[in-house]
Each structure stands twice: as C-alpha cells, then as structure tokens.
Image (tube, rainbow, N blue to C red; front, side, top):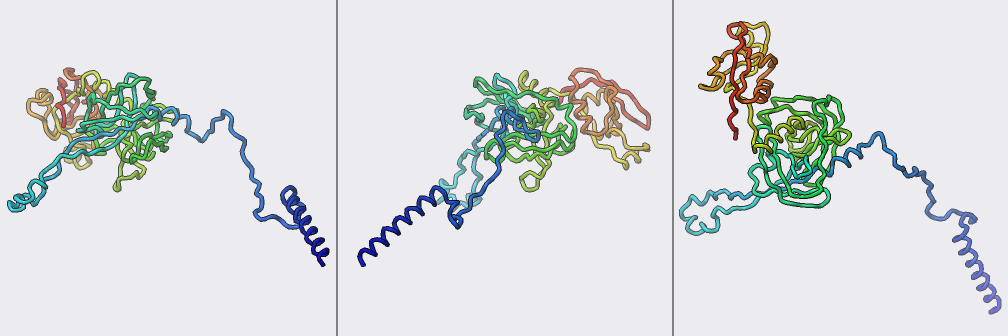
Amino acid sequence: MYRLWLIFAQTATVLLAIFFVVSTLRPELLPWKPRGEIVTVKEAAPAIDTVRQDSYARAAEIAMPSVVNIFTSKEVNEPHHPFMNDPLFERFFGEQFESRPRRTSSLGSGVIVSANGYILTNHHVVEAADEVEVALVDGRKTKASIIGSDPETDLAVLKVKLEDLPAITFGQSQQVKVGDVVLAVGNPFGVGQSVTMGIVGALSRSQVGINTFEDFIQTDAAINPGNSGGALTDTTGNLIGINTAIYSRTGGSLGIGFAIPIHTAKQIMEQIIQSGGVIRGWLGVSMQDMTEELAESFNLDHAVGTLIASVLREGPADKAGIKPGDILIAVNGKSVKNSAEMLNLVAALPPGETVTVTVIRNKQEKSIPVKVGVRPQQK
C-alpha cells in the first residue's frame, strides 16, 4: 500500500511540473484558453517631424511664451457697520467694528510686445492697483510698473525689468476677415495659461457699450474672466488683437468675445510710452444716431450721418459756427454713418489742425472749417 501511494505521489508531482512548464512557456498547447484574453491593437507609427493640417500647435507654441499672467492687489476699507450708528452699540463694540483696511486681489493677462520689457494689457486689469505682479510661462515672476493707461479704449502699458523676454510678433489686424480662424491665449479663471480656438464673427463692432472708442474684432473663441488683456492671434501665432470683454449673463463665455485690433492698440501704446497718455482730437459736440423717424422730421429722404444734439459753448464747433440740429455727414470728405464712426474719426485728428466738416442745415449741405481741439481727459 505504501508503495502504491509513493508511485501516485511521484506521478502527480511530475504531471504538475509538466503542466506548470507548459502553461508558462506554451499556453496555446493547452486544450482551454487562459483567463484574460490577449487583445491585439493597431498603433500608429510615431510621427517624425510632421505637421498635422488640423493642428494649431505651432501657433500656440509661438504665442504662449509671450502671454503673461497678471496679478494685482489693492487696499480697500471695509464698509462701516450699520449698527455703529447706535451710540450704545458703538460704546461697547466700537473698536471691534471699526473700519479696517484689507487687501483685495484680481487677475488678468498681458502680452509682451517688446524685448525691453513693455507689456500691453487692459486698463480694467490694472485699474487702481497698488501692486502689479507678472508671471511668465517659464516660471519667472517680477513686479511691474504702470507706464500709463487709457480708460476710453481700455488699454494699459506695463514695464518689467527682465532679460531675454519673448516678444510677440504683430500681425496685420486690418487684413483680418470674417471667418478667419483665431486663437485666444490667456489665464481664464486663474486656472493657468490656456488656448482656445474660434473664428472671427464680425469686424468693426461698435456701440457695444464697453468703451468710449470701440472698433472690436468679435470672435467665438472662448474668452472668460482672466483672459482680459491676453492675446488674440492668427493661425501663425501673430498678434492681431487684445482680448477685452465678453458678452455674458452668467460671467462665462457664451461665444461672443471682443478684442481690440492690434493696429489700434499699437497707436495707443506708442502714445502712452511717449507721453504717458493719449491725445485725441475733439469738436465739442454731443451726437445722436439718425433714425428714419428723425430723418422724416428733418424732411430728408433717408437717414444719413449723425445729428448734432448739442454744442459746447466756446468749444471748437461752437467757434466754427456749428449749431444744434445740424446733421454731420462728412469730415474732410470722409462720410460719417453714425455717432461712433464720427467719434473715432474725430479722435484720430491731430489737435490744432483745421478740417472741413460737412453738415446738412435746412436741407442744404454746408462746408464749415473747424480747428480741432484737444479732447479733455475722461475719468
């Protein structure tokens, strides 16, 4: 009996050894499949220096190093507690509820436009800030000084003292067309630098109610809080606009964003760097867009130009003889369609220059020479 048990044990041991060897080295020889079926997949060969036609990676790679994150802070006083009007409350808790200063912070974006440290951003990003800090993509951080700003176009110029700054290349914003693909680069919601893609939805958007002087590029590239002051680029990474605002009822992107064309921003930037501010032409009038109803009341065949609603006493227009009720239709031969167009046209005129303003008065066209004044600084 013992001999039979020994033979059985040795045989079982040999069979188990054979099974272990076969299942490890040649599992396909077994009459059943092992658990966990082996899946065969197809993999694409690694791309070697190829550019995908549907990718904007190269444009993003060019533009992103030039876009910075801007962090601002300012000191504000806490509101006076309403119970402090009670003498008894003030007697016992006055010191505890006294108005105390505290620091608030906000964020935005900016674009390095010059290797010697100039950064272009929005006025509202740095407005009333006590401290401005700039963070680059390469990890460097530094304090920035405000060279100047222009509230009426919502532009500001900063300067930092750093070396080897990656200045962006300016594109041709005047050649942008509706339907062109654009990229928006910035720091939305403070999550870190991001790139979104869209198309140009409209050009020369005005009367949006954001700035005094408006000539926006409209895009559906996602622009969110924190993107303000960032770059709008073409598909080669060239700067064509400064992202400024969104149309939103919730605070998030709804597919309508606005950017200041870079040819406009460049003119403002150069004036700020040279003189610390912007000097604009001015006539001293307030205007109203013409409607078909107004045109009918003036016995005109159709709405044209812009209505002079009022004239500032002793202003350039008043001295030239322009009167309320005149309909301004051209400046130096350039036709005017609405008040926003007239405002931009006059603002671009050099102060001190005499221009010819064409108006309709009593259904008759009249040319009036006007010496352009200096537009007062707006708060």
